[in-house]
Length: 247
Length: 164
Image (cartoon, rainbow over all chains, first blue to last red; front, side, top):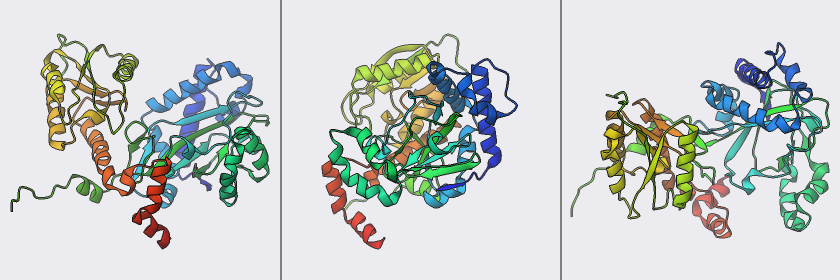
């Protein structure tokens, strides 16, 4: 689902924080136009330094006290509707910069539920620039998902690359202008490919799930934090039955 | 009341487990790596870890670490989920640590207890974690064949699926 960011001011703050940290890392002046600066970052950072830049920005996200609240506010009502009103939120932030024609930062076709993630999780994916065609991510629409999932065992030898080639016609590249957010279930196959557009992709992703639904290997405490717990749940969690009766 | 750390106190004692943490057994070598890495990243002087005994519900080594608190800046647990399941006992432990001006760190979860205000977030986490086993699927989504078959046979899920 693609929707308008519910708190555009917070999204702008996140983008400004990101652009300013990137400029500081690259010893450049603070950009007047974050969007133009981010789009054109390919001319200012080599693929070899890209991961260091990415990690520096992730550290800034972690150490910025308002960041998580701001991120959540971009889709608070949407999450309430789709996921629930008692939520666990990923503690860290997924962050990606994909330079034009860079083959080092690819995320092959996958579903997160195939590895450490619980299928009860939802991803809030927010681009910090306009993304479209190969500058964006692709996703396999729900209408095709079951058919390709059943075919997967046939690709034991050809691997994910062969699977991608064969299903490419069914994949959808998501055009998402800055100011909008994407909420999707990572049980759907998705990924990215070489960015053949002229400008760089900057995107963030954070997982949410209903607090009291099953977790997989990304667990409460080390990966997720409770962010909303309602009063009735607090009462129930700490309630103790009368004890000490004897027959 | 929380006290300021005294200058004659030194270092952060590691505290690792000999029994599974949330159902997973971590080699002590790995636990110590996690604790040492946490200490290094946070600029804490690491002191050789105390290892809790394997007997269920045994906290003798934790008791020894708590007794040592007047000489320490704090303790670094491998995981916050090594704390006792009893809320009363956990609150007593927080009291002892904060009351002596010390800190509790949990390396795996990257959590810190430095002040009474930090207790709420830590206890929210513990309360939810201890509630999960009471939920459908025991709050755990397993991906092996046997678990998937069990899930398919679980009346909770079949009733829910029919309702949908």
